Length: 432
Image 1 (cartoon, rainbow, N blue to C red):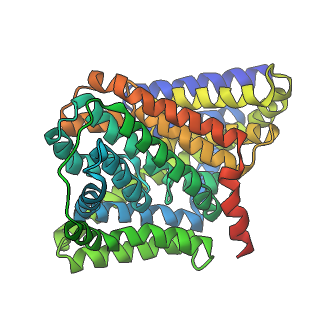
Image 2 (image 1 turned 45 degrees about the horizontal axis):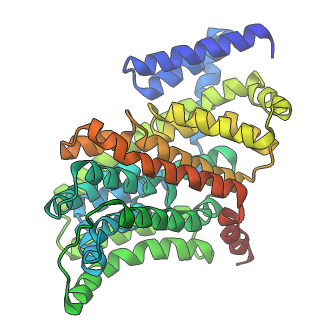
Protein backbone atom coordinates (compact mmCIF):
# COMPACT_ATOMS: atom_id res chain seq x y z
CA UNK A 1 0.00 0.00 0.00
CA UNK A 2 1.43 3.35 -1.06
CA UNK A 3 1.70 6.34 1.24
CA UNK A 4 -0.89 8.23 -0.82
CA UNK A 5 -3.38 5.34 -0.56
CA UNK A 6 -2.82 5.12 3.20
CA UNK A 7 -3.34 8.85 3.68
CA UNK A 8 -6.49 8.79 1.55
CA UNK A 9 -7.88 5.93 3.67
CA UNK A 10 -7.20 7.86 6.88
CA UNK A 11 -8.82 11.00 5.44
CA UNK A 12 -11.89 9.12 4.23
CA UNK A 13 -12.25 7.38 7.60
CA UNK A 14 -12.03 10.69 9.47
CA UNK A 15 -14.65 12.22 7.16
CA UNK A 16 -16.89 9.20 7.77
CA UNK A 17 -16.73 9.60 11.55
CA UNK A 18 -17.18 13.35 11.14
CA UNK A 19 -20.42 12.79 9.23
CA UNK A 20 -21.63 10.45 11.99
CA UNK A 21 -20.78 13.09 14.60
CA UNK A 22 -22.90 15.60 12.66
CA UNK A 23 -25.89 13.27 12.95
CA UNK A 24 -25.85 11.86 9.41
CA UNK A 25 -27.30 8.30 9.46
CA UNK A 26 -24.60 5.69 9.97
CA UNK A 27 -25.31 3.79 6.75
CA UNK A 28 -25.20 7.03 4.73
CA UNK A 29 -21.88 8.03 6.32
CA UNK A 30 -20.34 4.61 5.67
CA UNK A 31 -21.78 4.44 2.16
CA UNK A 32 -20.41 7.85 1.16
CA UNK A 33 -16.99 6.95 2.56
CA UNK A 34 -16.96 3.61 0.74
CA UNK A 35 -18.00 5.22 -2.55
CA UNK A 36 -15.35 7.94 -2.18
CA UNK A 37 -12.69 5.30 -1.58
CA UNK A 38 -13.71 3.26 -4.61
CA UNK A 39 -13.87 6.43 -6.73
CA UNK A 40 -10.29 7.27 -5.79
CA UNK A 41 -9.19 3.84 -7.03
CA UNK A 42 -11.38 3.31 -10.12
CA UNK A 43 -12.99 6.66 -10.92
CA UNK A 44 -16.64 7.69 -10.28
CA UNK A 45 -18.36 5.67 -13.02
CA UNK A 46 -16.59 2.39 -12.29
CA UNK A 47 -17.07 3.05 -8.55
CA UNK A 48 -20.86 3.26 -9.00
CA UNK A 49 -20.93 -0.15 -10.66
CA UNK A 50 -18.63 -1.72 -8.08
CA UNK A 51 -20.53 -0.16 -5.17
CA UNK A 52 -23.89 -1.60 -6.23
CA UNK A 53 -22.31 -4.94 -7.12
CA UNK A 54 -20.51 -5.28 -3.77
CA UNK A 55 -23.64 -4.14 -1.91
CA UNK A 56 -25.77 -6.82 -3.56
CA UNK A 57 -23.16 -9.54 -3.03
CA UNK A 58 -22.87 -8.76 0.69
CA UNK A 59 -26.64 -8.88 1.26
CA UNK A 60 -27.23 -11.97 -0.89
CA UNK A 61 -26.50 -14.29 2.03
CA UNK A 62 -29.00 -16.78 3.47
CA UNK A 63 -27.52 -16.56 6.98
CA UNK A 64 -28.62 -12.91 7.18
CA UNK A 65 -32.23 -14.17 7.37
CA UNK A 66 -31.41 -14.95 11.01
CA UNK A 67 -31.31 -11.22 11.79
CA UNK A 68 -34.94 -10.26 10.95
CA UNK A 69 -36.23 -13.43 12.62
CA UNK A 70 -34.59 -12.71 15.98
CA UNK A 71 -35.35 -8.98 15.70
CA UNK A 72 -39.03 -9.85 15.19
CA UNK A 73 -38.85 -12.23 18.17
CA UNK A 74 -37.49 -9.39 20.30
CA UNK A 75 -40.24 -7.00 19.19
CA UNK A 76 -42.99 -9.57 19.81
CA UNK A 77 -41.58 -10.27 23.28
CA UNK A 78 -41.55 -6.54 24.00
CA UNK A 79 -45.14 -6.08 22.80
CA UNK A 80 -46.46 -9.15 24.65
CA UNK A 81 -44.99 -8.02 28.00
CA UNK A 82 -43.99 -11.58 28.87
CA UNK A 83 -41.03 -10.19 30.76
CA UNK A 84 -43.43 -9.50 33.65
CA UNK A 85 -43.67 -13.22 34.45
CA UNK A 86 -39.89 -13.65 34.30
CA UNK A 87 -39.26 -10.90 36.83
CA UNK A 88 -42.12 -12.08 39.07
CA UNK A 89 -40.65 -15.60 39.09
CA UNK A 90 -37.11 -14.46 39.88
CA UNK A 91 -38.42 -12.10 42.56
CA UNK A 92 -40.51 -14.84 44.19
CA UNK A 93 -37.61 -17.28 44.44
CA UNK A 94 -34.68 -15.07 45.43
CA UNK A 95 -36.15 -11.64 46.18
CA UNK A 96 -36.26 -12.31 49.93
CA UNK A 97 -32.49 -12.92 50.08
CA UNK A 98 -30.60 -9.77 51.16
CA UNK A 99 -30.12 -7.82 47.92
CA UNK A 100 -31.94 -10.67 46.17
CA UNK A 101 -34.13 -8.27 44.20
CA UNK A 102 -31.03 -6.96 42.44
CA UNK A 103 -30.00 -10.52 41.60
CA UNK A 104 -33.53 -11.13 40.31
CA UNK A 105 -33.01 -8.23 37.90
CA UNK A 106 -29.75 -9.74 36.62
CA UNK A 107 -31.33 -13.18 36.15
CA UNK A 108 -34.34 -11.66 34.38
CA UNK A 109 -32.00 -9.77 32.05
CA UNK A 110 -30.05 -12.97 31.33
CA UNK A 111 -33.14 -15.01 30.40
CA UNK A 112 -34.73 -12.14 28.50
CA UNK A 113 -31.49 -11.48 26.62
CA UNK A 114 -31.28 -15.12 25.58
CA UNK A 115 -34.68 -14.72 23.90
CA UNK A 116 -34.24 -11.35 22.19
CA UNK A 117 -30.50 -11.10 21.46
CA UNK A 118 -30.72 -7.33 21.88
CA UNK A 119 -29.10 -5.26 24.60
CA UNK A 120 -31.28 -2.09 24.31
CA UNK A 121 -34.51 -4.11 24.13
CA UNK A 122 -33.49 -6.04 27.26
CA UNK A 123 -32.63 -2.82 29.11
CA UNK A 124 -35.89 -1.10 28.15
CA UNK A 125 -38.22 -4.02 28.80
CA UNK A 126 -36.70 -5.20 32.07
CA UNK A 127 -36.15 -1.61 33.16
CA UNK A 128 -39.81 -0.67 32.81
CA UNK A 129 -40.76 -3.72 34.90
CA UNK A 130 -38.03 -3.68 37.54
CA UNK A 131 -37.18 -0.02 38.18
CA UNK A 132 -40.36 0.71 40.20
CA UNK A 133 -39.88 -2.47 42.28
CA UNK A 134 -36.26 -1.58 43.01
CA UNK A 135 -37.32 1.91 44.09
CA UNK A 136 -39.95 0.51 46.46
CA UNK A 137 -37.31 -1.70 48.11
CA UNK A 138 -35.02 1.27 48.73
CA UNK A 139 -32.35 0.79 46.08
CA UNK A 140 -30.65 4.14 45.35
CA UNK A 141 -31.15 5.66 41.90
CA UNK A 142 -27.52 5.14 40.90
CA UNK A 143 -27.60 1.41 41.66
CA UNK A 144 -31.04 0.91 40.07
CA UNK A 145 -29.87 2.42 36.80
CA UNK A 146 -26.57 0.53 36.83
CA UNK A 147 -28.32 -2.80 37.47
CA UNK A 148 -30.57 -2.41 34.43
CA UNK A 149 -27.86 -1.02 32.15
CA UNK A 150 -25.29 -3.63 33.22
CA UNK A 151 -27.71 -6.56 33.11
CA UNK A 152 -28.98 -5.43 29.72
CA UNK A 153 -25.55 -5.92 28.18
CA UNK A 154 -26.06 -9.68 28.41
CA UNK A 155 -28.19 -9.26 25.27
CA UNK A 156 -25.00 -8.90 23.23
CA UNK A 157 -23.35 -12.01 24.64
CA UNK A 158 -26.00 -14.66 25.25
CA UNK A 159 -27.44 -16.42 22.18
CA UNK A 160 -29.08 -15.30 19.97
CA UNK A 161 -26.66 -12.35 19.73
CA UNK A 162 -27.16 -10.06 16.73
CA UNK A 163 -23.53 -8.80 16.71
CA UNK A 164 -22.30 -12.40 16.73
CA UNK A 165 -24.56 -13.23 13.78
CA UNK A 166 -22.97 -10.33 11.88
CA UNK A 167 -19.50 -11.44 13.02
CA UNK A 168 -20.17 -14.98 11.81
CA UNK A 169 -21.28 -13.80 8.37
CA UNK A 170 -18.33 -11.41 8.00
CA UNK A 171 -15.69 -13.94 9.04
CA UNK A 172 -17.42 -17.08 7.70
CA UNK A 173 -17.41 -18.54 11.20
CA UNK A 174 -20.19 -20.97 12.15
CA UNK A 175 -22.98 -19.01 13.84
CA UNK A 176 -24.03 -22.15 15.70
CA UNK A 177 -20.51 -22.51 17.12
CA UNK A 178 -20.50 -18.84 18.13
CA UNK A 179 -23.83 -19.26 19.93
CA UNK A 180 -22.55 -22.31 21.80
CA UNK A 181 -19.31 -20.53 22.66
CA UNK A 182 -21.22 -17.86 24.58
CA UNK A 183 -23.00 -20.24 26.96
CA UNK A 184 -20.25 -20.66 29.58
CA UNK A 185 -19.07 -17.02 29.42
CA UNK A 186 -22.68 -15.83 29.61
CA UNK A 187 -23.45 -17.96 32.66
CA UNK A 188 -20.16 -16.97 34.31
CA UNK A 189 -20.76 -13.27 33.68
CA UNK A 190 -24.30 -13.56 35.05
CA UNK A 191 -22.89 -15.22 38.18
CA UNK A 192 -20.20 -12.55 38.58
CA UNK A 193 -22.78 -9.77 38.27
CA UNK A 194 -25.01 -11.54 40.81
CA UNK A 195 -22.21 -11.99 43.36
CA UNK A 196 -21.29 -8.33 43.02
CA UNK A 197 -24.91 -7.26 43.57
CA UNK A 198 -25.18 -9.45 46.68
CA UNK A 199 -22.14 -7.76 48.18
CA UNK A 200 -22.49 -4.17 47.00
CA UNK A 201 -25.34 -2.54 48.90
CA UNK A 202 -25.17 -1.98 52.66
CA UNK A 203 -27.42 -2.11 54.56
CA UNK A 204 -28.71 -5.03 52.53
CA UNK A 205 -32.18 -4.57 51.10
CA UNK A 206 -34.60 -7.41 51.72
CA UNK A 207 -37.99 -7.88 50.04
CA UNK A 208 -40.84 -9.81 51.59
CA UNK A 209 -40.66 -13.59 51.64
CA UNK A 210 -42.92 -15.63 49.33
CA UNK A 211 -44.63 -18.88 50.25
CA UNK A 212 -43.77 -22.06 48.38
CA UNK A 213 -47.19 -21.96 46.72
CA UNK A 214 -46.52 -18.44 45.42
CA UNK A 215 -43.12 -19.51 44.16
CA UNK A 216 -44.50 -22.52 42.31
CA UNK A 217 -47.27 -20.42 40.77
CA UNK A 218 -44.73 -17.86 39.59
CA UNK A 219 -42.53 -20.61 38.16
CA UNK A 220 -45.49 -22.17 36.34
CA UNK A 221 -46.35 -18.81 34.75
CA UNK A 222 -42.76 -18.19 33.66
CA UNK A 223 -41.95 -21.76 32.57
CA UNK A 224 -43.13 -21.38 28.93
CA UNK A 225 -40.79 -18.39 28.60
CA UNK A 226 -37.82 -20.08 30.30
CA UNK A 227 -38.22 -23.09 27.98
CA UNK A 228 -37.52 -21.02 24.84
CA UNK A 229 -33.84 -20.09 25.47
CA UNK A 230 -33.21 -23.63 26.72
CA UNK A 231 -34.65 -24.96 23.45
CA UNK A 232 -32.56 -22.54 21.36
CA UNK A 233 -29.31 -23.61 23.02
CA UNK A 234 -30.07 -27.34 23.17
CA UNK A 235 -31.41 -27.65 19.62
CA UNK A 236 -28.36 -25.92 18.13
CA UNK A 237 -25.98 -27.97 20.30
CA UNK A 238 -27.57 -31.26 19.26
CA UNK A 239 -27.77 -30.20 15.62
CA UNK A 240 -31.56 -30.48 15.40
CA UNK A 241 -31.94 -27.12 13.68
CA UNK A 242 -29.76 -24.38 12.24
CA UNK A 243 -29.62 -20.91 13.86
CA UNK A 244 -31.85 -19.58 11.07
CA UNK A 245 -34.45 -22.29 11.67
CA UNK A 246 -34.22 -21.58 15.40
CA UNK A 247 -35.13 -17.96 14.69
CA UNK A 248 -38.24 -19.06 12.80
CA UNK A 249 -39.24 -21.37 15.66
CA UNK A 250 -38.70 -18.55 18.17
CA UNK A 251 -41.00 -16.21 16.23
CA UNK A 252 -43.74 -18.84 16.00
CA UNK A 253 -43.37 -19.77 19.68
CA UNK A 254 -43.53 -16.21 21.02
CA UNK A 255 -46.41 -15.37 18.68
CA UNK A 256 -48.39 -18.43 19.82
CA UNK A 257 -47.62 -17.78 23.49
CA UNK A 258 -48.69 -14.15 23.22
CA UNK A 259 -51.95 -15.06 21.48
CA UNK A 260 -52.79 -17.86 23.93
CA UNK A 261 -52.21 -15.59 26.92
CA UNK A 262 -54.14 -12.73 25.35
CA UNK A 263 -51.09 -10.46 25.32
CA UNK A 264 -51.02 -9.98 21.54
CA UNK A 265 -53.67 -8.68 19.18
CA UNK A 266 -53.56 -7.58 15.55
CA UNK A 267 -52.47 -4.03 16.37
CA UNK A 268 -49.62 -5.18 18.63
CA UNK A 269 -48.45 -7.76 16.07
CA UNK A 270 -48.45 -5.13 13.32
CA UNK A 271 -46.59 -2.70 15.56
CA UNK A 272 -43.98 -5.37 16.31
CA UNK A 273 -43.70 -6.13 12.60
CA UNK A 274 -43.17 -2.48 11.69
CA UNK A 275 -40.53 -2.03 14.39
CA UNK A 276 -38.76 -5.21 13.30
CA UNK A 277 -38.83 -4.12 9.64
CA UNK A 278 -37.33 -0.71 10.45
CA UNK A 279 -34.65 -2.18 12.71
CA UNK A 280 -33.77 -4.90 10.19
CA UNK A 281 -33.61 -2.42 7.32
CA UNK A 282 -31.24 -0.21 9.31
CA UNK A 283 -29.01 -3.14 10.30
CA UNK A 284 -28.85 -4.54 6.77
CA UNK A 285 -28.11 -1.13 5.24
CA UNK A 286 -25.27 -0.71 7.73
CA UNK A 287 -24.11 -4.26 7.00
CA UNK A 288 -24.21 -3.70 3.23
CA UNK A 289 -22.42 -0.35 3.18
CA UNK A 290 -19.97 -1.56 5.84
CA UNK A 291 -19.16 -4.58 3.70
CA UNK A 292 -18.42 -2.29 0.74
CA UNK A 293 -16.14 -0.19 2.97
CA UNK A 294 -14.41 -3.39 4.11
CA UNK A 295 -13.93 -4.36 0.45
CA UNK A 296 -12.32 -0.95 -0.17
CA UNK A 297 -9.89 -1.48 2.73
CA UNK A 298 -9.15 -4.99 1.43
CA UNK A 299 -8.28 -3.56 -1.99
CA UNK A 300 -5.67 -1.43 -0.26
CA UNK A 301 -4.50 -4.61 1.53
CA UNK A 302 -4.81 -2.68 4.78
CA UNK A 303 -5.71 -5.69 7.01
CA UNK A 304 -2.78 -7.68 5.64
CA UNK A 305 -0.32 -4.82 6.18
CA UNK A 306 -1.50 -4.34 9.76
CA UNK A 307 -1.46 -8.09 10.47
CA UNK A 308 2.08 -8.43 9.11
CA UNK A 309 3.25 -5.54 11.29
CA UNK A 310 1.96 -6.88 14.62
CA UNK A 311 4.81 -9.37 14.98
CA UNK A 312 7.21 -6.61 15.92
CA UNK A 313 4.96 -4.93 18.49
CA UNK A 314 6.59 -4.75 21.98
CA UNK A 315 4.72 -6.88 24.49
CA UNK A 316 3.72 -9.53 21.96
CA UNK A 317 0.20 -10.88 21.32
CA UNK A 318 -1.20 -9.71 24.67
CA UNK A 319 -0.28 -6.09 23.92
CA UNK A 320 -1.77 -6.35 20.42
CA UNK A 321 -4.98 -7.79 21.83
CA UNK A 322 -5.14 -5.03 24.45
CA UNK A 323 -4.78 -2.45 21.66
CA UNK A 324 -7.76 -4.07 19.89
CA UNK A 325 -9.79 -3.94 23.11
CA UNK A 326 -9.00 -0.26 23.70
CA UNK A 327 -9.73 0.73 20.08
CA UNK A 328 -13.01 -1.17 20.12
CA UNK A 329 -14.00 0.50 23.39
CA UNK A 330 -13.27 4.00 22.11
CA UNK A 331 -15.23 3.45 18.88
CA UNK A 332 -18.01 1.70 20.79
CA UNK A 333 -18.76 4.77 22.87
CA UNK A 334 -20.49 6.36 19.87
CA UNK A 335 -21.20 3.46 17.49
CA UNK A 336 -24.03 0.93 17.83
CA UNK A 337 -22.73 -2.63 18.33
CA UNK A 338 -23.84 -3.84 14.89
CA UNK A 339 -22.15 -0.94 13.10
CA UNK A 340 -19.07 -1.36 15.27
CA UNK A 341 -18.80 -5.04 14.31
CA UNK A 342 -19.19 -4.31 10.61
CA UNK A 343 -16.58 -1.55 10.55
CA UNK A 344 -13.90 -3.08 12.76
CA UNK A 345 -13.98 -6.85 12.24
CA UNK A 346 -12.59 -6.81 8.66
CA UNK A 347 -9.50 -5.09 10.10
CA UNK A 348 -9.32 -6.75 13.53
CA UNK A 349 -9.97 -10.32 12.36
CA UNK A 350 -6.71 -10.78 10.37
CA UNK A 351 -4.81 -9.30 13.32
CA UNK A 352 -6.47 -11.77 15.69
CA UNK A 353 -5.49 -14.64 13.41
CA UNK A 354 -1.92 -13.32 13.24
CA UNK A 355 -1.59 -13.48 17.05
CA UNK A 356 -3.06 -16.98 17.20
CA UNK A 357 -6.62 -16.36 18.44
CA UNK A 358 -9.31 -18.83 17.41
CA UNK A 359 -12.10 -17.18 15.34
CA UNK A 360 -14.79 -18.40 17.75
CA UNK A 361 -12.82 -17.32 20.82
CA UNK A 362 -12.14 -13.89 19.30
CA UNK A 363 -15.80 -13.39 18.38
CA UNK A 364 -16.95 -13.96 21.95
CA UNK A 365 -14.24 -11.66 23.34
CA UNK A 366 -15.33 -8.92 20.94
CA UNK A 367 -18.94 -9.42 22.07
CA UNK A 368 -17.93 -8.93 25.71
CA UNK A 369 -15.91 -5.86 24.74
CA UNK A 370 -18.95 -4.42 22.99
CA UNK A 371 -20.94 -5.02 26.16
CA UNK A 372 -18.57 -2.59 27.88
CA UNK A 373 -19.06 -0.06 25.10
CA UNK A 374 -22.82 -0.20 25.75
CA UNK A 375 -22.33 1.02 29.34
CA UNK A 376 -19.17 3.10 28.98
CA UNK A 377 -19.77 6.65 30.28
CA UNK A 378 -20.86 9.08 29.06
CA UNK A 379 -22.46 7.89 25.81
CA UNK A 380 -23.00 4.14 26.28
CA UNK A 381 -26.29 3.22 24.62
CA UNK A 382 -27.65 1.29 27.61
CA UNK A 383 -26.84 4.15 30.00
CA UNK A 384 -28.63 6.65 27.75
CA UNK A 385 -31.58 4.26 27.31
CA UNK A 386 -32.01 3.62 31.04
CA UNK A 387 -31.68 7.33 31.80
CA UNK A 388 -34.40 8.14 29.27
CA UNK A 389 -36.93 5.62 30.64
CA UNK A 390 -36.19 6.22 34.33
CA UNK A 391 -35.36 9.89 34.57
CA UNK A 392 -32.16 9.02 36.45
CA UNK A 393 -29.40 11.46 35.37
CA UNK A 394 -26.43 9.89 33.61
CA UNK A 395 -24.07 11.49 36.12
CA UNK A 396 -25.63 9.47 38.95
CA UNK A 397 -25.05 6.17 37.18
CA UNK A 398 -21.46 6.77 36.09
CA UNK A 399 -19.83 5.67 39.34
CA UNK A 400 -22.19 2.73 39.97
CA UNK A 401 -21.61 1.33 36.49
CA UNK A 402 -17.82 1.15 36.89
CA UNK A 403 -17.82 -2.22 38.77
CA UNK A 404 -19.84 -3.78 35.92
CA UNK A 405 -17.25 -2.49 33.45
CA UNK A 406 -14.45 -3.92 35.63
CA UNK A 407 -16.16 -7.32 35.79
CA UNK A 408 -16.50 -7.46 32.01
CA UNK A 409 -12.86 -6.47 31.53
CA UNK A 410 -11.90 -9.35 33.82
CA UNK A 411 -14.10 -11.62 31.69
CA UNK A 412 -12.35 -10.56 28.47
CA UNK A 413 -8.95 -11.55 29.82
CA UNK A 414 -10.30 -14.77 31.33
CA UNK A 415 -11.42 -15.70 27.82
CA UNK A 416 -8.00 -14.72 26.47
CA UNK A 417 -6.04 -16.85 28.94
CA UNK A 418 -8.57 -19.73 29.15
CA UNK A 419 -9.84 -20.27 25.58
CA UNK A 420 -11.62 -23.51 26.53
CA UNK A 421 -14.31 -21.39 28.17
CA UNK A 422 -15.43 -20.59 24.63
CA UNK A 423 -14.17 -23.60 22.67
CA UNK A 424 -15.37 -26.55 24.78
CA UNK A 425 -19.03 -26.62 23.71
CA UNK A 426 -18.40 -25.90 19.99
CA UNK A 427 -15.86 -28.76 19.90
CA UNK A 428 -18.35 -31.20 21.42
CA UNK A 429 -21.17 -29.84 19.28
CA UNK A 430 -19.26 -30.97 16.18
CA UNK A 431 -19.30 -34.53 17.54
CA UNK A 432 -23.09 -34.51 17.41
